[in-house]
Length: 350
Ligand code: ATP
Ligand code: MG
Ligand code: FE
Image 1 (cartoon, rainbow, N blue to C red):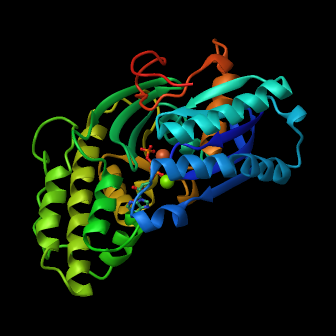
Image 2: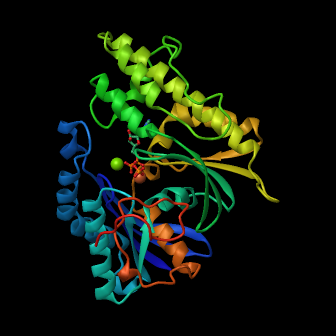
Image 3: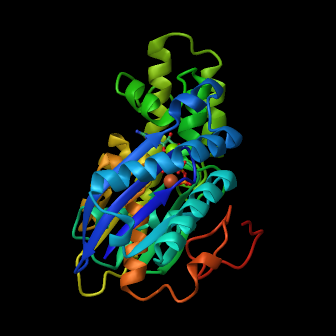
């Protein structure tokens, strides 16, 4: 199978062409155009600006990916695009672009859940069979999922307030480190003392796998008020990151303890933009090793938003015959939980 994937749910306009054979993925092209420069002055992603940028970039990005693949539309077996969750304006652009190409080329269209893309992303580059425990940590999500098989995702616990990426972005904003916050906070944390501040680890000692990061953010805000020097800021970043690491590692340890790996090895996947944080990866690695599990993390390029993971999700669905309904009839969904079988509940656009 050869699939064109399109991703436009947040602030990356991306397109990729992927070949999928015998369960193995090969990328023929993988284009990511980030809109960082457009959003940086506002210290966050502005939905209207994102939608307009996607509208300007989508065709060019798809053309670049097709060119780089050396294939024509006629040689594709299907077109996949993110149908949600995400910023509705951008999702609509990608969805309409994908549908139009599929329609014109007479190929099946596969609407993809962006979170499923992140969930399957380790399978782009590694032998990572089902089942596995997944920690999805991104700008909008923080949850543990039991990935039993394709389309079979069970949520084990999630944040009850902020996502971890969101917390990183807010801390960066408080300290005047610019946008996006994650990489800036991680870089500064390297020069700081993780024990300088004893920030709260909310819900750490409560049973279960739910998490909370809002209280941590408030504590950081209080500490930031008197932090002027680089050194003080570095201490805050290091202490904040240490609190996140402690919470994620302890919850991961618990999740792995109860995880049913069947006859195979215990695999623990961390995916989403925050998975590119090296300190967090190291903390999770320690937790995994202690539980006899292997930590699998996609390469940095495929942690943050990309179209390769969307093409892969589309290919896996098509290969498994899971595209029972007409993809062209699918709608854009601002919210779309991964553990929900199909698109029914909340407001629907498109
Ligand atoms: P979602 O996938 O939930 O819809 P999103 O697509 O915006 O959200 P991603 O692109 O997967 O999220 O990740 C972006 C987030 O990852 C941002 O919040 C960013 O700050 C965070 N991030 C990126 N790099 C790092 C890092 N090195 N350390 C911590 N956080 C990071
Ligand atoms: Mg992004
Ligand atoms: Fe994402």
